[in-house]
Length: 244
Image (cartoon, rainbow, N blue to C red; front, side, top):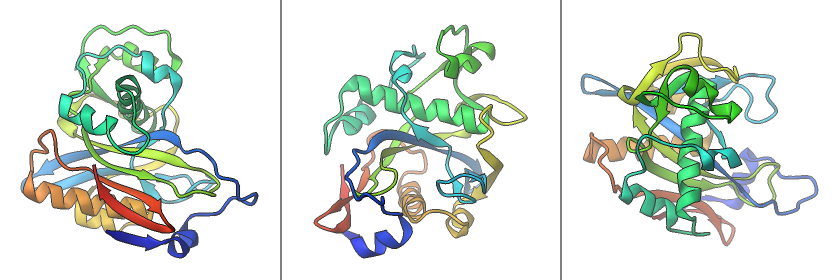
C-alpha cells in the first residue's frame, strides 16, 4: 500500500548534500504502554531543542544498536514468533543480530527514560552502557517485547536507520528511576493517551506507527506474540507499507 511519494518524504527528511547513499544503521525503539481502565497510555519524550536531529519533537526512547548489545546476558530470550519476524524480510537478520537489536531497545529505554526492563536479580557486566542494570540489580529480559513495526529511512538522507519498533508494558519495568535516564537526551517524559500522542509534535513515521499500534490493540489488547508487523520503506520512489 502506498504511503507517501518520494517528493513528500523529501519535505520532512533532509537530503544529504553530497547525495551519497548511506547504508542504514540498525536501530531500535521501545513503545512502552500502560493501561488505565479501557484506555492505553504511551510513554513519549521531547528531544532537546539543541539536538541537530528532530529537535523539539516527541519521540519514543530509542537509538542505534551498539556492538556491545550482542554480548549482554539475558534472563529470558525473545519469544520464538517475535524472533522469526525480526529475522525475516529485506536484508535477512541473524538470530544474534536480532537479539542485539531487541536489547538495544531496552538499553536506550534505560538511558533516556530511566526505566529498566527485566527481572530483579544479580547481574554483572563490564559494558559501561549496561552498568545501570548491575547497579540496580536488574537482569535484562526479552520475552515481554513485541515486534510492532519496521521502517527504513529513504536513501540520500543525512542519517539513515533501519529501525525496529518494539512494545512492552509498564508492568515489565523492574526499576523506575525517579530522575530519568543518565543520558538526559529527553527533556520531558509524559504518558499520553494514544489519541493525544498522535496529535503531539511527532515525526510522520511515529504517527503512522501509533496508528498501526492502536489498530492492533483493538484486535488484540494483550499484544500476544506473533502479530503482523508493518514494514515501511522506499520502493521505486514510493514509500510503501508491507507486512512481514
